[in-house]
Image 1 (tube, rainbow, N blue to C red):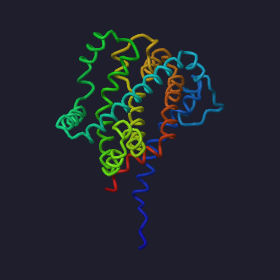
Image 2 (cartoon, rainbow, N blue to C red):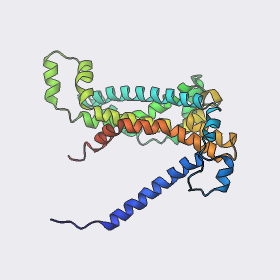
Image 3 (cartoon, helix red, strand yellow):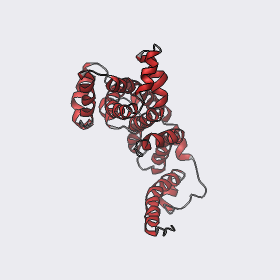
Image 4 (cartoon, rainbow, N blue to C red):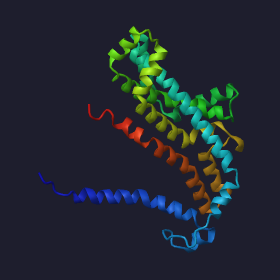
Amino acid sequence: MRTRPNYLGGLAGFVWLAVVLVPVYYVVVTSLRNQRGFYDANPLSVPAPPTFSAYELVLRNDFWRYFANSVVVTLATVAIAVAVALMAAYYVVRGTTWFSRFTYRGYLLGLAIPIQATIIPVYYLITRAQLYDTLLAIILPSVAFAIPLSVIILANFLRDVPNELFESMRVDGAGDWRMLFSLVLPMIRPAVVTVAVYDGLNVWNGFLFPLILTQSPDQRVLPLALWSFQGQFRVNIPAVLAAVVLSTLPVLALYVLGRRQLVSGLTAGFGK
């Protein structure tokens, strides 16, 4: 049967695309202007000629130190959160005791606690542990808040693994660790990638914990550095937007590399 084109839906799609792309275009072209060109030229015109002076200014002002701090915090948080969440999901799904069911409800309760409500207790614990103004002060609470949702996503995927596979491996003498890494991990790899990308994006863009739990420039991560760039460069908008573009490139690369697994993980349960 021949279907009529959905002109209204197509128009809404183009409007949505313009709303998303115009700000991105503005940020990129503005970062390629000098300070005089920012005030004199049309904001949406292509700079003639484009200049990388704003990028040179950003790279000369400790950008790579902040970038390295963000990479360390993000990689450490994602690695710890995914490893702990995978083992916890295996326990709550394969466990048969009341404690495994109680543990899963505890992770569900973790989703209901907003980060803002825990700032004072987290600050107190970090200072008592003498971790204030260190990268570990950002990593530990970030891991804690990443685990509940990660466990729930991985547990839902793990429940779809046929029980016969576990029983056959158990008959062959496999223990829990071997089943976890030889059976579970390969079969729920899209879910693991989805959780890793989601947690990585949240930590990379995280602002509250770095703002509250660090102070010195040596421990500053990129979101906090972008905020400080506004004061450091004051009226130099092209330099601030150049820093925004540079900080976005790793996130864009992560999305491109994990896009297929991410989409597969997000849509795996829609057909049930």
